[in-house]
Length: 389
Picture 1 (cartoon, rainbow, N blue to C red):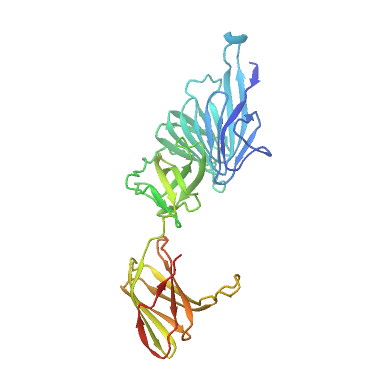
Picture 2 (tube, rainbow, N blue to C red):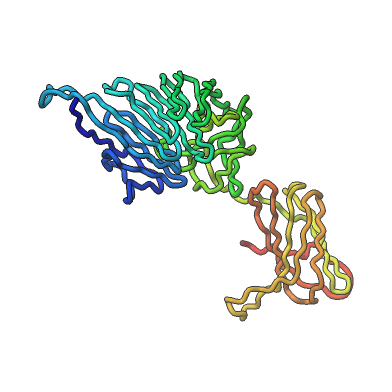
């Protein structure tokens, strides 16, 4: 039967995406042999001639190997639509596919990896070949039914909705298993606070790790992050501040990924948390100055670092940086803080800058005070003068 080439197109592009040697753009046509590659934190959505859509996740290389129409008859508006035959070759990475349900196909829509062949007539499924070292190809069916073949072993398996399988060229058995349930994100925070930018993972039975994807749109056509999380939290510190759509799914011990849950999240750096210095006392003995003060607003895990420098005179060059005279640190675990500021000269104006480091990374306001060095031995109360920022 005669066939004619049918073109596809790129629907959307996010980040660094190449079409052959050129930069890919939304609206670009896809012809047979077209190769599309996404970079890190980048993605693309394509539409095939039968209406099927595929999302190329970050670090994916795919080729439109076959896109043809068979058996079209007639001319003009009365012409019958051709029967579609399509094959996408997944060289590396992951594809999320929503195959058109009512398309006329001469052969099942197929996705080929170096070690597997997946054919489908109408469904939503995922195919991945993202670990060439193991040569594992992974298929997960979210809706419908697919046929996954292992050419090296000459066998295959039908994979129904809610099932998944890993195919390896050296393993004959194809074990079809249930997909993990969608994680419960009701207790997972929607705010992701910088500078740490950590998003805690939920508890999910059977999950050895999680996949987290972040997109600018609810349909996940513009995926900007795609990462596997093996610890208790996903590191999203590199995300720009703003509102995002995040989806998460569990991964079982064999690497098969389950159903998604989605949550809108807000990434931002909160304003510095205020804290105050109350009653203070500056002691001096032989030129050594020790500052004691009552603090409010700090936690036991906070660390205070004090830096003492000479105050610049009005005639000092603007480019001159005041040299650090002394540094001291203390824990915020008690109400009264003691800081040994070292040997200071009497009658000399100094600047005392106190910064706070929190274990969780939340910013805390820095405070700067002015004081004058004391002479002899003794003490003075409330000698600190706050320098307005």
